[in-house]
Image (cartoon, rainbow, N blue to C red; front, side, top):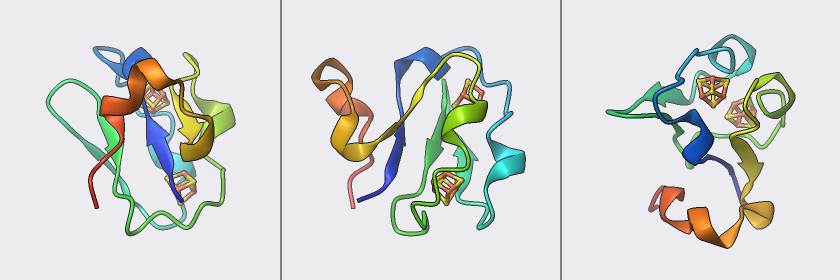
Length: 72
Ligand code: SF4
Ligand code: SF4
């Protein structure tokens, strides 16, 4: 399991989550930030700081945003 950044981040990318991640596994993609699943330690620190609620525990990711899951 990992955390996933979904559609609300697209074109927002304010990077508030970056400062919270203890392992620096959040990186910038073309249109949104994404979390490198193999590096994420599931600490949850990034989730509450996102102003647009784009970050989900993988299990709680809404189905409509399933494509935001990063393949491992
Ligand atoms: S805090 Fe939310 S909106 Fe901002 S970069 Fe991170 S995931 Fe995207
Ligand atoms: S859950 Fe923790 S380790 Fe994973 S991306 Fe968020 S802050 Fe980083």
